[in-house]
Image (cartoon, rainbow, N blue to C red; front, side, top):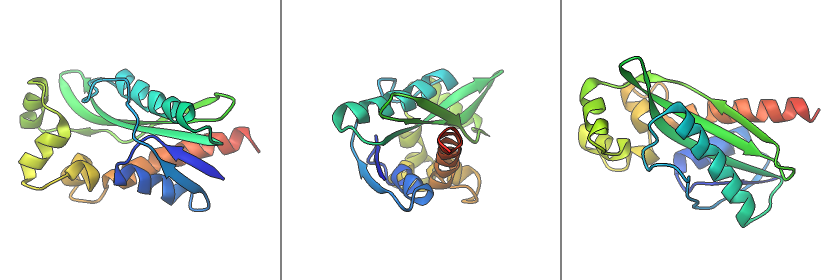
Length: 167
């Protein structure tokens, strides 16, 4: 089985490899077609779907996967959110969302100023490329759930939907 993922981010790629260990996985850098910092559940979902479709437009593959992280308000509190999309050559779209975690007020304030979460997190914890490693979710869960694990959960949901309909 061949899978193409619309990201070069190691956390996202490893998540797909974890859930599809038998697959040959290639990765491409594609534009999400949404803001660099998606700011709603819908925008984050759209980014994941756009990434998967962009993969299919570059290299037709049995499965294309797009994963997108973002933030969303629930009431007046800002939460981390994430979405994934799996698209087949017939353009059947499977979508799933995963964990949500409340972001601290100081992070919310910086996001509202237009900064991107990945950049904020690097400064917040004085580390480099948090977005490609544990992610904000890893920081705020004390590494109990890393960005890779968070996206692996979404990819499990995608694979399960796809397998259910193709049994």
